[in-house]
Figure 1: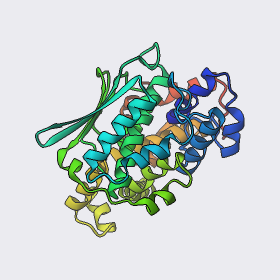
Figure 2: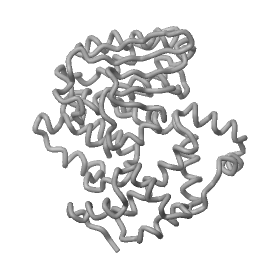
Figure 3: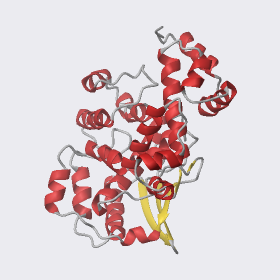
Figure 4: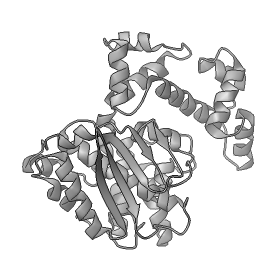
Amino acid sequence: MGFVTGMLAGLHRRGCEARPLLDAVGIDLADAASRIPVERYAMLYNLVVAELEDEGFGLFPHRMAPGTFEFLCRGMLGAATLGVALNRAGRFMRIVLPTLRIDIQREGQRARLDIVELTPIAAERNDPARVFALEWLLRLLHGVACWFVGRGLALDAVSFPYARPQHADDYALVYTEHSSFDADVLSARFQANLLDLPIRRDEAALASFLQGAPGKISMLYRRDREMVFRVRDLVRDALPDNLSLETVASHLHLSPRTLARRLEEEGSSFRGIKDATRRDIAFARLTKTRQPIAQLAADLGYSDPSAFYRAFVSWSGVSPERYRNRLARDGVPISN
């Protein structure tokens, strides 16, 4: 939900009402514990852009007129390699967003993509509008890069120039498990040989891709993370049994080493998926039910309730009871 509220920040800045757009796609901001289907997120993306006539969501001093995404892609089309295409993208984005600079640097076997603010996006470093603007721009560049080479591209690590947001646990699925915060600039690091990958898309492929754009870029997340979702579903469906990496690999007809490598290529890990799955279920149950804490811990596969308490405090900063009491204090209805 953190990605949704960030997307709406520009609407609020311009005094526009978000409720009709949320209702149109069936998203309820009050249901903060629920996951948002990626299809609905992509629909909301396009509705916000259409409402503001700005593909930058009203977050930047300069409006990104509708069609900007198309011309970004057309500028990258025909490049020989991904490195050339990304350099073209950086020059194009400097024209449409002159307050930012995108740098691509090779450092031996590693490479780095930096997003540098020449003028601050917001007065406050941790302003939700600034956080989402940087999240979105990195996701845009990474998603387009994956599409042009026809494969998922693993980010080894990303440093974000703001404090850790509440939804940072989801960065393992969207970007990489190795995310850090409070950096000077946004910096994404990856293997340099990825820059030498050939561009595999042509004009016909681009014409098809642009149907549903620019929100369609969000849909790449699902394809890029196919193995992550398969593992998550197996782990979730087996609860309270605590599946091992070896057991899940056997279900998928893979060796444990191959499964670990595939998850790493998709920017995740088996442990990270297990933790995220338990976390999502815990938040949803505490928000929507009055299930006893000890029973919830057992349902999530924790043999010792104290282990669940420690895990929940690491996720939320508070105990399960305090989290549920805070919801009640805030007037969030909880069913029996």
